[in-house]
Length: 256
Image (cartoon, rainbow, N blue to C red):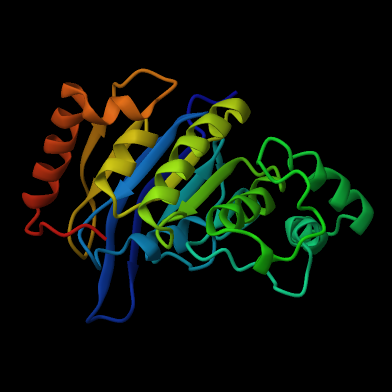
């Protein structure tokens, strides 16, 4: 196993001469590590994710996965956007198997592989339901199941719980921490929620305003497994203050 799972090396991206977005972004993610990206609104987090995931070409720099050049490739990444994007006319298991089918896996095999995850994802018994019959949290679990069943080296989460209410969001954060540990995923997540970043992450990468670069990296030294009592601990408060200070020192007190 490589010591570095994902290497983002000097990524540069601009949309014309008047709109530089990425200015030499570099950081690394170790195998099994959970890293969050936070930064001021409009700093370029989504553009950075699109470049990493191979959906946008960089103007400079490269992306490496397990030491191999993955710049412009989509195959090393399982990408989950903020909206669940479940097709309303497909059953939950058919939605969950969709990514595998698109990748060329036979429908029966894709459904069998997806079905194995329904119990640990809290969806057992809902295989033949349609998305409209699920709660918001269950829809996000189904979307995450569809993402991870593809078994890609790196999981990219773009504000996965941003559309949920506060109570459901908290439940989903706790669940994600548990299931991530069970499967030892390597995760890179965008979030606008400082507490979410601290609660879920091993490390938080703070981005500067656009054109963005890495301003600071903050290690989250809270023990695992995490529990909600940690949010009221003195160390959690210290980390939250440190992260907010890092954001404010870059000229913005908004996270997005």
